[in-house]
Length: 394
Image 1 (cartoon, helix red, strand yellow):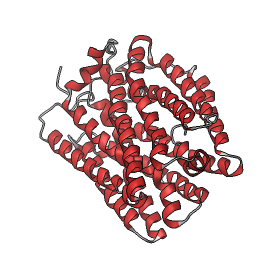
Image 2: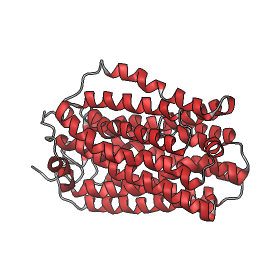
Image 3: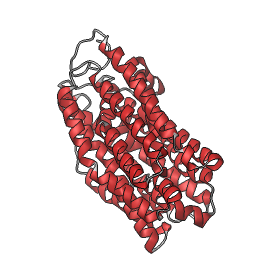
Image 4: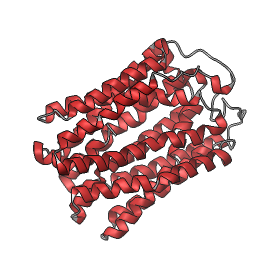
């Protein structure tokens, strides 16, 4: 919610601060750039002091910074607070997957990570609805004040949770990697992880197009900011069951198939590419809305699998590093490239053409996962809980 609420405030912030699309896109880019800087920092301290303490620090930092975003009186202040928000959120993005992987066995991880990924849809829906509603009744500053409160409340809840030990769910307790750059880079030994990370990078460039959907509907079809944001918020909520069903069925049927989960990601990404292209090239509002719903369902069905492959392409002791690097490589780098690319193209050619970056990136990611699925299917590797996706035997 803290990260994406700015999507529902694009039009009022641009009007208030007199920004171009490129300038506005820098708020998203800087947020993720700060996440790149924060991920290895939090991984270092988590390996030394444990994940719980570091997560608490991250939650407090990003929540306070989100509230501070509402105090911004100009572009410089807004960029500073959004960067601090992104830095704090790097703790959660990098460490939460390893925490969950150590709580649940391989049989249930894909379903658990499907539940985990619902926070994107729920947070996005709440942010769109709350941001647009508050901005229309008051102003955009108040929306940031509201967004920062839930994190502070939930930080108290984290105090009562017990942190699992690395490898606990796999039946073998292992030591987390020692803090240090050399140990953090050990994840780069695993080709399955590297291939998945590259595909994630391209996929999340496509996902960057989502923040432009309310503005697209406003500019192309004349919907008000509140109407456009409300529609997309509804899409996020109504498609929630798709992720749970897809995650459960994929975990049940594909978990033991070598390359099965990568193939599932390939299929859903290619479907997303086709639906997104049809949505953005149609001249009929009803058709555009229908295909927006379609591609949100398509990539949502495999949302949990994105994280499953992150933690299962490396041994348990490297899961903290794997989660942090995936946050850097995927959501970090693509979070900068995607918004900047669409923003620059929009200023020069219009948003209708610029947003076609999304289906192109979905298509490319689908091809990369298809190649990974084929490579994994041809590997003669033992299929155990800790060696299912290209991890060499120890």
